[in-house]
Every structure is written in structure tokens, then in C-alpha cells.
Length: 62
Figure 1 (cartoon, helix red, strand yellow):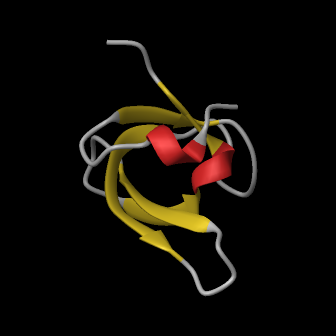
Figure 2: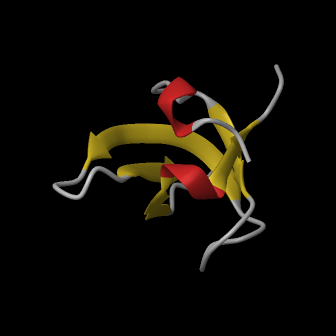
């Protein structure tokens, strides 16, 4: 898994853990929760959005 601190808005990513494992899309809305975990919104190609933890995603090489 990639370092969540290196995520940038607009990056293409694939979810490698958690509920949404196997889905992919574009990173949007990067936030840090009160407990220090990084949460992101991922927008899929079909427009569907979901939230996941930054540690559960891997940035795709461009």
C-alpha cells in the first residue's frame, strides 16, 4: 500500500483493502479526521462516489 501522505487530488487510484476493494477512480476531497486518519472520496468513471481510508488505496502509475 502506498503512503497516504503522498495522495493528491486528481490522482488515479485503486482500492486494495476495505469494503471497496477492487474499485478504482479519481481521488477527491482529502481530509484528516480527528483521530489522524486520512479519508478520501473516490469518484469512479461512472460518476459513483465512495469514501475510504487513504491507507486502503494505491496510486496508479501514470
